[in-house]
Amino acid sequence: MAFTGPSGATPRLSRRALLTGALLAGAAGLAPARPARAAETPQIRAAAAGWTGRGGELLVLTADALDTGYALRILEPGEAAEPGADVTGVLGPPLPLPLPSDFTPHSMAATGAVLWLTGAREAAPGRVRPALLRIEDADGDYADLPVPKDIGAGLATAIAPMGEHGIAVAVEGGPDEHLTALSRSRLAVTADGGRTWTAGVLADDLGEGYGTVLAETGSGVFAAVADGDGTQTAATARLAEAGAPRLVLTPAGSFPGAGRPMAAVAAGTHVSLFSDRDGAVTETRFTDDERTEAAVGPAADCACRGEILAVPGRRGLWLETDGTTIHIRGIR
Image (tube, rainbow, N blue to C red; front, side, top):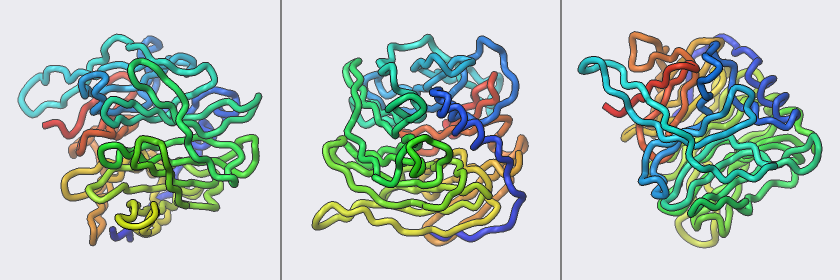
């Protein structure tokens, strides 16, 4: 995938301060700054579809106002006011979510009967380690996620399905056992439901990085990560088809000033990477041989009044939430 592009403003740094500061305090804290919202409105933290444990419905992970309580909910499309109008989502009641007391969730994806949640596990007071939770038949347990030795503390961030039984997980953190920044990004891939893993390096020297985003493609997974200055690096990854398990990472380019990656959404012919660049949202479309970028706003197919969330497990679908209204995009 080609990755070259125009210049842009340097993004704000509030995302990283919230992310690392909240984790150090023992809370999730991985949501960026959002517009004010009603106190009773739960915060959308992640989305996924395709979990047969709930009939493949569109699910969201929500957090309360203090990020101390998490719930799994069905997101139902509401009735459009008129043909062609925005489709908004209606949150259902909380569903049982068996989370260990020492686990803070971040993202989720499904492979058949298994729902996977990435996040952080408290290893000791003030120290968190990347963790992956496996939920099946209403029971949750930690998966044996490989954490590189050069990540002393951190968390598992993005996750994407890869084939029928495979997933790709971004494992991020830093060398210090007390997390201060997401300075390194690694990719862990399994094709057999977590029994065996293959790992590769996505990025180093990120400073206070923003966190990786992933999207499943027809041939593997697309990844994008940004350093503290907003320089994005993109790559594609796939498992070698023959011989011993091997992860093949192909660089897709580097782009200074691109900002914070919010979500990567794979459609039929391209991957859309939505980014926040100094408060403005851009959509960058990647194909195998070119890259195009456009500003995104109310006049386009994206209201972009808040945060954009990918929906692993359903191609071409994403959510936009401003803290009060949830827009469901790509279902028409």
